Each structure stands twice: as C-alpha cells, then as structure tokens.
Length: 357
Image (cartoon, rainbow, N blue to C red):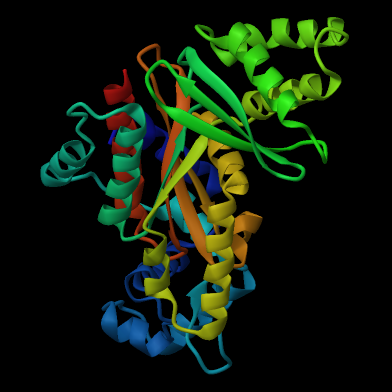
C-alpha cells in the first residue's frame, strides 16, 4: 500500500476518534474484530473468555452499555450480545483500524490477473473487476471512463414506437450503445438522415470535439435538416455526452454468501436491481474520482447500501498524465475485512492506472 494512503488513514483516525477511554476503545475494537470474523453478536462472557481480556463479565457489560449509549453498539435481540452500528463501523474504520499490507503473493496475484497481454482497455477493466471479486469474495466494481477515442461509425436504429438505439463505433473497434426516447411515429427516413448527418460531422473526432459545432448547426439549419431528424441528433448527442462512462460488475452472487434470513435475501435482491440499473453506482464511483484516495461507504450512510446492509470500498485510478479517469472497488457485507480489502483495492487501482498508461 502506498505511503499516501497510510498517511491519510492515520490522519483520519485522529479526527474521527471520539473521547473513549482506553478500556472502552480496546473493548470496542475487540467486538468489531469478532463481528468481522463471525458476523455474530458477542456477549460479555463470550468476549471475556474468547478474547482473553483481563476484565470481568460484569465490567464488560458496563463498558458495552456505555458504548451502546454512545450509538456505537446495538443488541439485535433482547437477550443477545452486541453488534456494531453503522456509526460504530465508521468509527472503527476511521479511528481504530490498523490497515494491513498485501503480501508479495497477493501483489503478484493481482498483477498476474490484471496483466495486459494484448487486452483492450475494456477487457483489462473487466479483468480488474473479476480479480477484486475473486480475491475479496465480494462484488467487484470498475467504473470505466468514457472513451476519448475518435469515432468511426454512428447509426440510429429503431427499436419500436418511441424508442431508438444509438450505436457508436470508435477507431479502436469498441462499440457502445445507448437507448433513447424518440417521437412516436418517427419515420425510417429521419433515422437515416440523422445517422448520415452525425457520421459526416463526427467521424475522425471525439464527441467532445464535435458537440458544440453540431448543436449550433442543428439549431441554425433546422430548415435544411428534417425537424424530427434534428431532434433525434440532439437527443442522441446529449445521451452520449452525459453518459459519463460505464460500470462493470462481477461477482454479485458473492453477496448472498453472508445472507441468513429471508428479509436479508430481499434486501440483497434490491441491491442486485440497483447494480443492474447502474446509474446510482456510477454516481457513487464518479464521486470517488474527485477524492484524494480510498473512499468507504458503510451501510445506511448511503441509500443504495442501507437496505442491503452492505459497504463499499472504492479508489480512483489515474492515467499516464496523473489525471483521474475512473474508479474501482468492492461491495460486500458491512462486516467485510476492511484491513485486507482497503490495501487490495488501493493496489489494484495503482496497477490499473499503470497498465492503461
């Protein structure tokens, strides 16, 4: 793991740790570590016996009661032990977690699985998502940046009343599709005219290079360009310019391994639907692009994960000019092994940045 990430973690600890006594901090850390390991509530007797603390069960109960009053622990059932709340996990991650370092074998595994070996950028990012999923036993996510490659072919294809597909092929051979809403009853001639208009002005350029000129021409020459075709061009161009990139998800089924109840299955199913929709995930990953390092979202801190009881660890990756061009990460249960996954995500982001450069 890089020194910059280590420094950031130490700084966060000083800012995030509330006024807990050394005893309370030690007890709380042991409770969270036991939860990460087993996923089960832990009681005072079990804690005293299993962790070898030099404290009586009665003393531990008092400390745990204070931690519960502070909003850091809760009891899932009246007679059960205690589990950390989302706020408690946040305190643990920001203030008490000792982030580990990857072994040389783990580094070699990441490098081997993500090795370029003639892969396209898309194939490389798919390999990164699969690698993160496999090593973490969670869902791996990679936000792929919008391509800056110059364009080769643009076409509008009817999908039925009110719907059309915009197909763009760039000079690298990569194909991207966007479904857009169009006027009901749009004639085939308008699709052909819009395709020809876009092709003549976009081929050999990026969307960014040609967008302003195309919009100006559409609006100033509406008489020469069929009105429906003009609206189609504007809609397709807006769809592509605002798409922001794509999301690659691998290993969603891993999220079911920690599920033990029917209501949890339903919550994870809702998360699956969100992953399929992708837009909410893309917004989260885009937010990571503006961060200085690894970002961690825990449970209810984000509406996307709150219902499913999940957490996400993400990190941006950079190109050869050190410009942030995307982000990657892991989604898993709230009790994921943060100490192991944080450096794993960080190192994978470094490797991907190096390979795409």
